[in-house]
Image 1 (cartoon, helix red, strand yellow):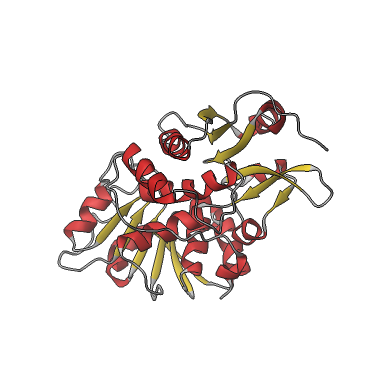
Image 2 (cartoon, rainbow, N blue to C red):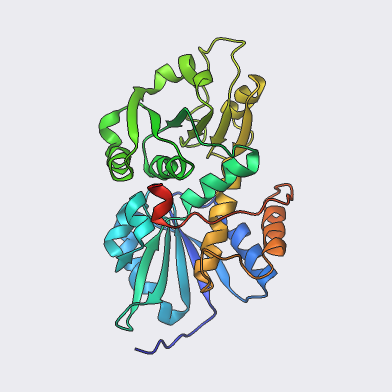
Length: 309
């Protein structure tokens, strides 16, 4: 089946609320650096609006893909033709794109680039070893991706701090798929044990972790922290973490590195290979959101074998 495309190529970030997303800054900078004329816009979307979005914004009209954020990372799967093996293993989707299937039909695919974003954000911050003692704060879709990221880095077990374990079934299911030992603990107990972990990923929304270390004892040294919240930055948690001798990286690093893989998918490239002029693209993306330019070269984490080794 031939694809009749009309209009300028474009992609969208879907979610609610979405008005403060920095994804447009990152994607537009990347497409300019690549010399590609491609639009990228915010599209406020709730779960009950997904079917309409897929009907209105089609590849025939030039749509190349969707970046999917909260609260849609699980719900969007129902609207897709296929999931990559990697997305199936992770269990949540943050990227939608179109490719022809084995029958030559244009089909929608769901993938996950959050895992790659988390792994590369931690590596860029200096955490390059196997996580011996890892923690996740929160139990939503991003926590599920964080679990897969820690597994990809070699973790055998993770402690997950939540308010209500019954609402974190997606994380529990992912641990079973990935063969990862999981312990759920009350979020209020994190302050007593934060210094035990060599790496912690906080997936709570902005402000929700502000009092997390309020009752923690002074003098204990913290490990590495990725706080996926990036606005405002530094977060209260990040400031307290650094004051305790820990190393902090923001969710903006994660957002940037996961966007690199999305740019590849939206422009028809293979995730496993660098973009053309990737160094220039990375520089442009970092400058667009005020991140310092580094020489770090990300490695895409996109194969299910990463999650089983």
